[in-house]
Length: 81
Image (cartoon, rainbow, N blue to C red; front, top):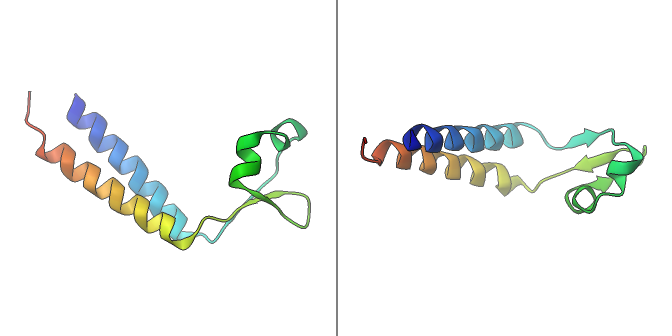
């Protein structure tokens, strides 16, 4: 059970990393309530057309792919119970 959990978590993180490698940025249409959120203001910047833009650094995608791969390898190395 725990092996499957770690394998799934590693696959999820790795796929997010691959998607961040493939795209340069993400434009979001957000509501006024979400606009006031501290988290939204921390991870995104305002775009000229009023939307919010998430533009992660290039190294984030590669880091997530590496972390996901290592987590999946760890899940394979766990003893069967």
